[in-house]
Length: 88
Image (cartoon, rainbow, N blue to C red; front, side, top):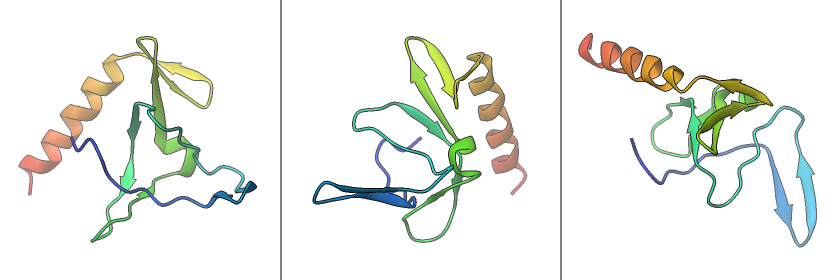
């Protein structure tokens, strides 16, 4: 996995003026996340399903939109990614 990438989402802040798009994921500096990305070439990437495609790691928990997921979810995702890579 890549530690640093560019993700493009709607909204942002300039000169203390903030604009948010309903349903768009919000990222915090230093946040650890699992994100499902659209794969355009080259970057920036987009988030699949907007906020539904962002999962945040917090205190040994995996959260998305206030719902906690078991850490085994990550293993399931890794398995699917590996199967797709092998089928190419």
